[in-house]
Image 1 (cartoon, one colour):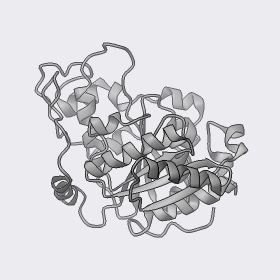
Image 2 (cartoon, helix red, strand yellow):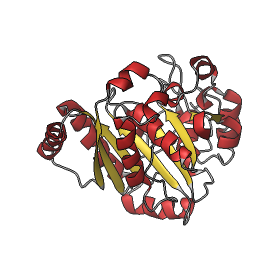
Image 3 (cartoon, one colour):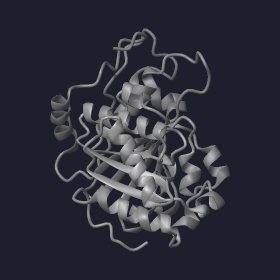
Image 4 (cartoon, helix red, strand yellow):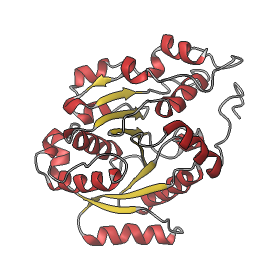
Length: 301
């Protein structure tokens, strides 16, 4: 339980969450994927590529930027000036107050609605980006001692679970570095986690910790992505690190190749989508992530 406002207690058990998941999502309610990992491993690039590829195949895509750095808009290909003008949901005091009963920074002593109705959040707060991807920028901390984050946390927790999705809708949430989002239970309500690592020990260590916490939150399907690989030996190295740390039963393992073009065209992924090796591998990843959850994604880039 939060020491400041008494809200958003510890995560439910795996079995309790499974019950909640069935109640909230229902049958054929699309796919909700959370992308996690150590800082700098390419989470935003993986999120943006998957979102754009899925949207190009006719799926309804909502990309959620839950990283306090708020880089996903530019990575998706939204112009830098427009991206800088986006007002994060957590910074919209009127919306946060309307939904939770307390404005940002005012959680201390307030009676918060910890399960706010966020069914309208996409219609009211999303920005439409390239290929029709709808982007929600959630926002976060801007200054030290800025006050209790409980209203924003309650809102973010409810946002994804409260979306009314069609069977061919996809939600992809890009998270900030590390595992704090699991500590606050922000990843609760997702169908699958996409754990992104590079072949280094430190990245794999964070990746395994994220995988274990995802499982504890009731996310029953966890995929591993080994990014920036230069040879099969890099994948073997990452998996050896994972085994040394105790292993994890991943639903799939995907290698994404190192691509100089990713450095040349960053922050946006637009040029990568034009038949690059990275986009081809990312299309395969999208197939694995969405298989059985939504309509066919297709194989062509």
